[in-house]
Image 1 (cartoon, one colour):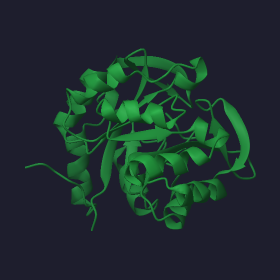
Image 2: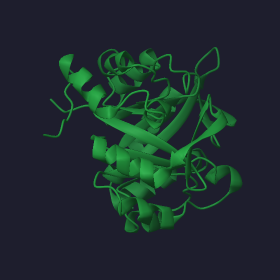
Image 3: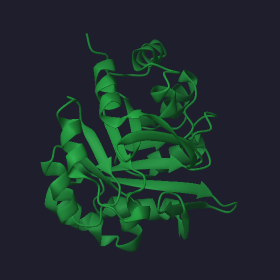
Length: 253
């Protein structure tokens, strides 16, 4: 059985890690590179770094930050934010990133997934989608969760998988930062629909929430931010808790 992955997420603004609730009211959580190195040492399976202002302020994700990160950690990491082209991705991967995450540009140009998968392989391409239930269906949002698209998330995600995305990072904006648990029903729906790994994001607050998302939600990986940044839960303790409950996880000897 494949092990379940624990992935700290670092939302980056000017090299600093920030965290909010429902995508707003951001507060500083520390230096992104220092936190990344700490999580690697604690046994995190992967890291995700998202430049949350890149698409809003129309800045490129800085290759310099990626180089700093790669020099300090020894586990795979994904970088996203403001990616608009194959050349953008080439720069990030050559700077040390293992995968890239694309979001807003996919809605504007779905064919970018085909191009990236053809150029670098699906294993490098993570489709990161921010969704919110609008009372009728789960809707895709772009521009850091600021802009609704009217797109039905379920059908859209299946299309993007078919185009070549190697993983789906699924963030429920309704749950983000609330610490009330993941969107279990929707996560399970997507996990059962697609053939690629699903990373659940948004709502982690307790160790039990991770058990729930791996069992009820059928997620392959779980991503969290503030509970790790502010040391509410430490990764070694979380992995021991999961293993005790028969959730397969990697624990270094």
